[in-house]
Amino acid sequence: MVKQNNSAQTRESHGTGRTGERDEREGFLISWDGEHSLGAVIRDRRTRLGLTLSQVADRVGCAKSYLSEIETGMRQRQPGLELIGRLESALGLDAGQLVEIANWESTPASVRERVTSSRLAAQRLRSLLESTGSGRDSLDRVFDSGELRRLVDDLDPITKPTEAGGLELVSLPREVPVINRVTAGYPTEFTDLGYPARVADDYVRVPDIDDPDAFGARVVGDSMQPDYREGDVVVFSPKVPVVSGTDCFVRLEPDHESTFKRVYFERDSSGAEMIRLQPLNSGYPPVVVPRERVAGLYSGVSVVRSLVGLAR
Image 1 (cartoon, rainbow, N blue to C red):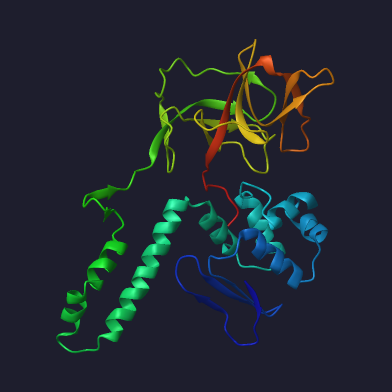
Image 2 (cartoon, helix red, strand yellow):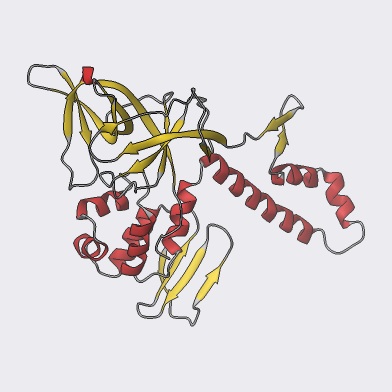
C-alpha cells in the first residue's frame, strides 16, 4: 500500500494490477499488489498525509459520510471515475493510479480469477525452465514430467479439460437490448418503443449476465449522482431478487411512469406497505408511494459507461 521511501526511485511498474510511484513532496512510495481494496488504499494514503475525512471530502466536493463509506467498503458500487480523479489529485497521486485499482475491482470475478491463475502459471513456468539448466535434454525432462502440460492447460485462456475429459467452454458476454431511457429524476412516461421482448435498435455487451430477459436503459438526469451519470447505460435483470436498498428500474401506475431510484421497503403508521424511492443526489427529495402503485421493480446489475469526457 503506502510505504516510506528515501531512494531516488521515481516510478516502477510490475504488470497488470501492480503500480508504484514516488511522490517527491511527501516521500511516499505508493504500491498496490491487488490485495488491498480501493477504500483501504485511499484511507492509508489520507492518514499518512495527516488529512482528515472532512479535509479530503471538501477538496473533492463530496460528503464526509460518502467518503467514509468508500474507505470502509460499505458502498457496493465504485465511485465515479471523475471523483476518483479528484481523489488522486487531492492525495498527491499521479492520474490513473486509483483508477487502475477501481478498474481491477470492477472487473468480473471470473475474469480476475483467470488473470490471476494465468500469472501464477507463468511464474511457475519461468521457475521451472530456469531450474532445468541449459542442457539439450532439459526441455525434454520438463515435458516428460507432465508439468509442462499442466502449465499449458492453466495458461489456456479459452478452454480447459474437465474431469469427464471434455472441454469447458468460456461463456461470451451477453448482448443486452437497450430499450429506452430511464429518468434519474422525477418519474416520466416510459415506452419500450413497441419493440418485441429482447429486441431493440441498440445493444450492449455485458459479462456474467445469464438472464435472457435483462435489458438496459440510458440514464437521464442527475438524481442518482455520483454513482450514475447521465448517458450511463444501466443493465437491469428481472431474474435478480429485489431487496431493500437495491438500485432499481421502477414502473409506476396508473400513468405508466418510470424512474431509476434506490428502493426501500417500509410501512406507514397504519401498517400499509410503502416503497421509498430514494435519490442518491441530496438535491432531490425521496418519494414514498403505496406498494400497489408499483407495477414493476427490476434490479440494476451492471453499468456501461463511456470514457469520453472523463478527467484524465
